[in-house]
Image (cartoon, rainbow, N blue to C red; front, side, top):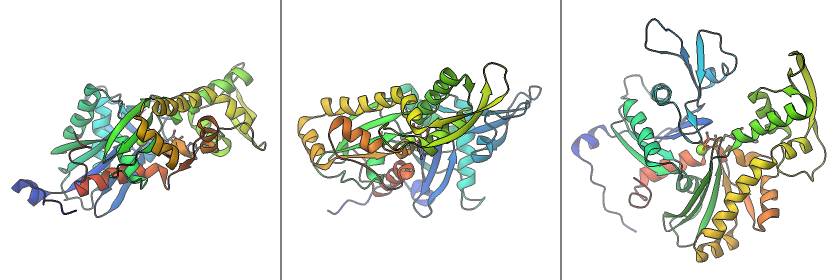
Length: 350
Ligand SMILES: Nc1ncnc2c1ncn2[C@@H]1O[C@H](COP(=O)(O)OP(=O)(O)OP(=O)(O)O)[C@@H](O)[C@H]1O
Ligand SMILES: [Mg+2]
């Protein structure tokens, strides 16, 4: 189908340079038309504390700042500006975006003043959306468009979003799970719960503390989850050691954990994720649910890499479930495609 040439004001035509940003709770990705994914870093920024000077100075960002989480010396403060997919610390988010866009620029002289497309969770409130928009403007964007994370993820996962057939995509991130039903280039249903991979880590920390009296760091818990984590208990037993601090004497102690332990530990947040999928199937328009029953469900986001998650969901809801290729990058790639094609100008943008 021939599409009319988009109209851009003269300024925009001369300086058009667009970047797509997935500002996630755990990871931030930047995508450009010509470079593909040009940045993929943890959403962490580390400030130098200079009480006398007043203004904060960024000491590190991304991977470097992530290494300082829970380990920063007293004069440094490592911050995760995003919680549950939305901005929790505005000034930290602004600094982080600014630094990331600088890191992603092909040449230092290349303007930071790009047109931004940002992914937002469907469940974000108007205030939260405005905060994301304003943080991007403060970081140098001269125009900001927002796209729902579900629609972006569905596009990135290669689902037939423009067709009348309904597709269901479940994006399990660090802080949110988004369930979207997409048809005819738009979101027919969107539901979200503020539960994601971070909650699995926190559940592992509290399980090990309650059962063994050992306090694990969050990063250790995440490592355990990625190594032996399982969404099903009914799998061959595997073990690994994890070291934390004993609640008794404060000294380091190593405990042996199994994949069955982890399945028990994460059961509560996992049920919340499954509940969101069930709710979507109960609430979305009936015709689209029939399509989903035929086509199955696609999982995206880092949380979808949890072992046996697809099998657990199939077991609970009786539908076929598959994990998208490269689930961690689906949202930003999909949003990039949407921004470049103009395909979703009416349905997808605000
Ligand atoms: N192999 C793995 N097994 C289990 N979980 C994983 C694995 N790899 C990554 N994760 C989890 O995926 C989450 C990060 O996913 P992702 O980058 O999609 O989140 P995000 O987009 O930053 O968050 P959100 O969309 O909620 O704002 C983290 O909680 C991480 O622990
Ligand atoms: Mg995400």
